[in-house]
Length: 246
Length: 90
Image (cartoon, rainbow over all chains, first blue to last red; front, side, top):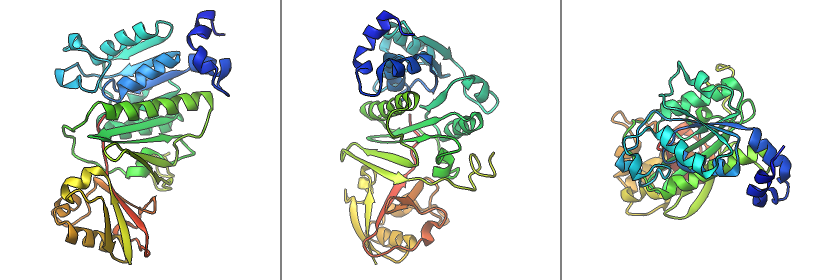
């Protein structure tokens, strides 16, 4: 049940056709695992907190650096040197004290991924490297929970939603390809757009509204201000979700 | 076959900012060869030192991945081919 304060707080979204108090209650009951509290994690966590997701579990092993502040908008100059997960939680609790924020200042590894995700209803991929993205994709498939992928470079971004057992996964898309992990260029508005798309997908999934970004990779080219899509088919031989993987 | 290659802004530095390029070829590999003939700077970007298509890039024809045929996928006159680089930043 929503409290009177919650009804007032979320009034404008409850008004949306098909959303209603039932949709808000679904958000309130949801537990979301956000992997990364950086450029993508900041807008994802901010808009999911504002929307009233009941529990946000935020994992990030990093500490805030000055060079993060052009894009990681949950962290401010006064937070330099602090853990990103705690820095993010501090702001999110001020934004919405009605929800629960859990912080995990740990590196996500093959050994702990399943435990860290725990009983979350879904995983948001706000990481900065492909190996951990693959690991989380695999973890989502093993747990049978959705995976919301996002990535950025410069003025470009990508997003895709994965529903295990039904739609193509990240490994179906990239087939295990690895690219060198290196410092990448980015301006804050790019992860802001992609992170908001990921948060939108999460809200749509939880409330059961609309059509998800599944089976297609969304490609955002800000310099041309163009969105394009590429079809992504399930790979029967996929090592994560195909017959070999499960 | 005449194929329309579409590149994202990222590639502009290698193609003098040409992002829509007409190429000739009957397979994706031949189309890439013609693309590189027109813009030689792309060769080191798209192929490794052994001449293999770099793992960090993907090809789509008419919006669909060329996997598993890769550079051997046949193309038709008027097809659209996208070269996409894999990004991992967050």
